[in-house]
Image 1 (cartoon, helix red, strand yellow):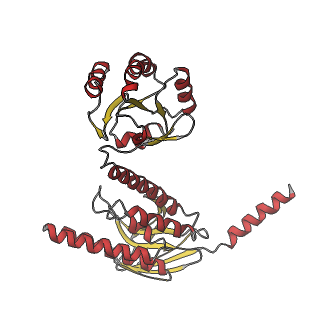
Image 2 (cartoon, one colour):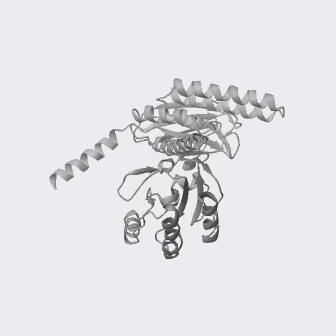
Image 3 (tube, one colour):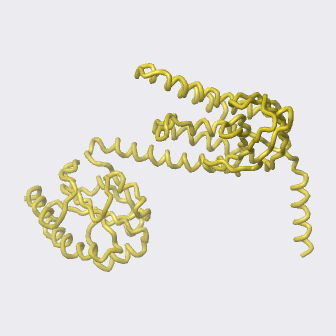
Amino acid sequence: MRSFKYLAAAALLLAACTPKTSIDCTVAQAPGAKIEVRQLDMNVYKLLDTLRTDASGRIRCSVDVEPGDPEFVYLFYKNTKIASLLLEPGMKVSVKADTLGNFEVEGSPESVKLRDRELSYARFQKDMDATLDPSELSRIYITHYRDNIKYVVANMKSLTVVPVLFEQLDTYTPVFNQSTDAILFRKVCDSLATVYPQSRYLKSLEAETARRENALKLRNLVESAEQRGYPELNLPDVNGKRVQLSGTGAKVVLLHFWNSADATHKMFNLDVLLPQWERWHSKGFEIYAVDVNPDKSGWASVVRSQNLPWINVNDGRGTASSSLLLFNVTTVPASFLLTDGAMTTKNIGGEDALQKELQRLLK
């Protein structure tokens, strides 16, 4: 109990010793104006305080900033952002602003960087809005994109790169819209992790980086499928051994997506697939069955209890499996016939269609 009291007292002392970060802002020609102090919380703003300027347009406030975890803090007049700040513990920041969004800042070099990048982004948006010529729009975009890359590469350990990486051309299109940008995102994450490992802004960037890396992986898989005529799959079987779709060695392969938790799918195995496999396997027919049940132990139990003789795989990701995306599968069951390195048919709907195709391909 005594040691707990000592630890609690030490924690309180540490909190008390963490210096407050102060903001002294003067808003030109805005006496008695209401100014909101907001903190960026992932992709939304959290209101920290609402203040009234004095007769000279001045406000003063303090913000809690934890060591090693800088905060993005913004000042708003009505709905206009009049100052953007990236604050660290103990800073004394002085801001001179107007109600239109123009401001100067002293006492925070990172805030100066942040302001400069926002000005660059604003000029880019203005230039894009001012022209309809496609070639000019392309030139403006490429210039800004390259400028952003140069800034990010030169400031890998600055959190100011986070809003740069999240810039948008419009609601649906990011400025960094190349699939290979995932490589740059990863480098930034790794660099920032050496300086701000606990930052929630880094965690947000990490999530976006993972999404982009997955998209890049899928693009590479699709591109590598050009020689085969279908995307490659390399998924684990019931023994954990990975099996490639292209490595079955069969002339005709039925790629079958199913759910081992569905009774009708299990019946389809025995009533339809098994008779066809037994009839045609010796003539070059194989089944590559991809289960979408995330319960891998349940799936393995079904495979063994039904004595399914073909290739059975499951990556345990359920409906989030990239295999579904690669073959544009939205519902299961779904089946495709692959022969001689190409997809010969679209989704095969039933037993009669399957039998007819096998007779045609393996007669």
